[in-house]
Length: 433
Picture 1 (cartoon, rainbow, N blue to C red):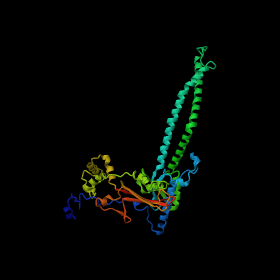
Picture 2: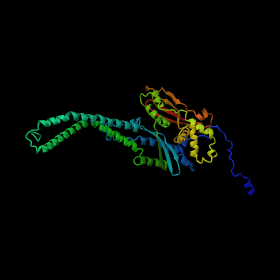
Picture 3: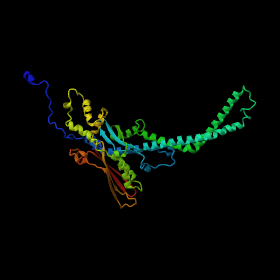
Picture 4: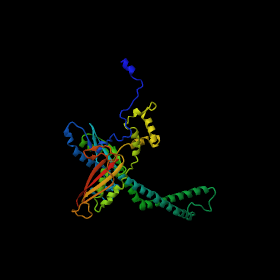
C-alpha cells in the first residue's frame, strides 16, 4: 500500500472519455405520461383493471355535466323564458373541459383537467358594459334635469316670500339671520323632494331593466366561479367521483387562454357549432384555424449553442477551481446569447421540447349538408402548419414513439355529434416543437 500511494499523483488530471463537440440530440426528450395514456395505474390484481375503461367514460360524462350546470328556475335570475336542457347543451358561452387524465396511487387519484372559461369572459364584458351605461347615461341625465330645474324651485319660493317666512321690507335687523336660516331650510327641503322625484323617474324608466341585467350577470358569474371553489360545489363532484373510482380525489385544473391549445376542447367546440341547421362548415373550421398562432424556429438557437459546447452535460468536468456552482457556469454561458442574468431561467425554459405549437389539423366527416338530405355526406380536411417531428424529420435525430406509430409530439382527439339528418364526427390534431 505504501508503494501504491507513493506512485499515485496528488493532483491527477481528469480527462473526459469520448468527448464529442458539436453532436446534437443524443438525449431523447420524453413527454409526460398523459400524452400516451389517459390513465396510469399499477396493480397486482388484474381484476381491478377491468373497470377502468367504463369508469373513465362515466367520469368524463359527470365532469362535463358538472361544468354545464345552470339555474333551474329562470325567474331567479330575472329571465322570463325557460331554457330547455337540450338548448343549454348547445350554448357556445360555456366552460370547455378536456377529458380527464387520471394518475392512480395507492390511496388517491390525481385528475388533471384543461379548461377554457369562455362564459366568464363574456359575463365580465356584459357586466362592465351595462355598469358603464348606468354610470354615464343615467347620471348625466340626472345632472341635466337638476341644472335645468333648480332655478325653477328658487323662483317658486320667491313668489310666496310675503306669505311665508321669506324676506320682506318689514324685517328687523335682529331677526334677519333667523329668517335667512329658515329660508334656506325650506329651500333645501323642496330641493330634496325634487331630487327624489327625479331619481324615481330615472329608475322607473331607465334603471329597472339595467339593474335587473346587472343582477342576472352577477348571479351567473358567481355560479361560474363556484364550480371551481373547493368550499362550495367542488366537494359535491368529489363525492360522486369517489364512489366511482373508490379513492380520494385530487384535482389539477389548468386554465388555458385559447381553445386551440388542446385538441379535446376545439373539437368539442367545433362539433357544437356544426350542429346548427345552417352551419357553414368551412367558415367554422377557419374560425378555429385562424386562432392558432404558430411559433417560429428562432428559439432553437439558444439550445443549440449550449449543446454544441457541453454535449455530454457533465458540468463538473468543465468547472474550474473558481467556479464551484452551476449558477456561475450558467452566468458564463449566458454571454453566448447576449442576455442578462435575469434571462437565465428563460434559456432553460426554451430548452424544453414540444411546448410551442407547430401545426393544427382539422377533419370533419358526416351528414353536414345545408339541405336536409341524408344521402349526402361531406368530408373536409384543413390544416395550418405541419405535424412532423422536427428532430426526426428535419434534423435526422431519433425520436420517441407512443403505442406503435403514434408520434410523441402530436395529440389527437375525436368528437361526435348528430343533427336531424344524421351524425357526424370531428377529428383534431395538434403538433408541438
